[in-house]
Length: 279
Ligand code: C2E
Ligand code: MG
Ligand code: MG
Ligand code: MG
Image 1 (cartoon, protein in one colour):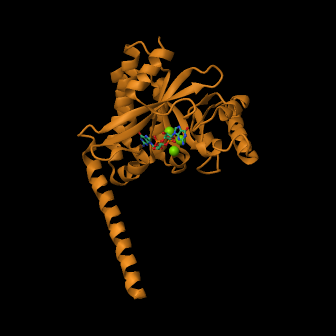
Image 2 (tube, rainbow, N blue to C red):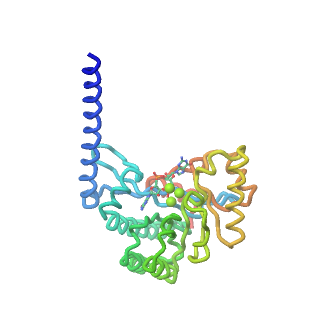
Image 3 (cartoon, rainbow, N blue to C red):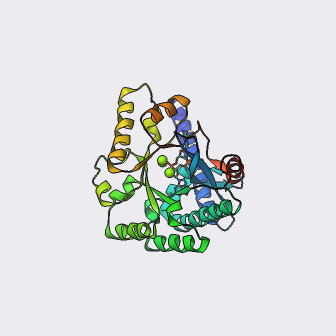
């Protein structure tokens, strides 16, 4: 009897696993058609100057509007997009859409200084820099207004091709931010090697400040590193007024997070700019 029960549990378990892997397979197949079906959207999360409260930039965050499942988080499809190489055309779409949008805001008299996009390691193929510089020229956007966010892990996979590409983008005038700073490697040598404009303090360090001494020390240290190297610093995942006050007190310049605004769909972000940032 016991064995039989065990069997049932096993059957149930494998049925559940089967259902999940089928679901995943379905999602992966759907992703292949998402671009041509126009299912991607960018959301925009404002970045604020902590001292003035002004919106000085935004981070574009990719959303996949699945016809059945609704919005799917990039955390759930970017890894697959990377495995399959789909990240390359998707990434090109992100650049194109972000620049088109920046141009549209300019033309509507709504000013946003910088727009950041996220770029993952596998996107840094030879053609990427070319795509970016061409699109910048095509949309008439000064390259310094486009910021490229990448993680420490990308820079650690240091190779000559990557270095060449980053310097092409750098020479073109794009700026760079290190995303999720502090979660990658403790080796800071790459900060000497690549020129970076901003460090983004990962939200895991913000979550328990003020109040947790160790996390407070980490946040303070990151702000110090940025100051000492002449880099800007952006706190991510600021969810409370206490966190904002704490960061302001430490001289952190920029912040983003639910306390200010969540990532907003294009229309809502545009309305916000109309109120806050008319030219
Ligand atoms: P990330 O670049 O570190 O983006 C920050 C994430 O934190 C976003 O999640 C954002 O919605 C979320 N967030 C913002 N404020 C708060 C807050 O106050 N509290 C909390 N708990 N979360 C907050 P999202 O949009 O789901 O993106 C997840 C990751 O997916 C991003 O992390 C980025 O690495 C990647 N990603 C997003 N868009 C793109 C893209 O266009 N291309 C590539 N390659 N990766 C992307
Ligand atoms: Mg980011
Ligand atoms: Mg981040
Ligand atoms: Mg992240």
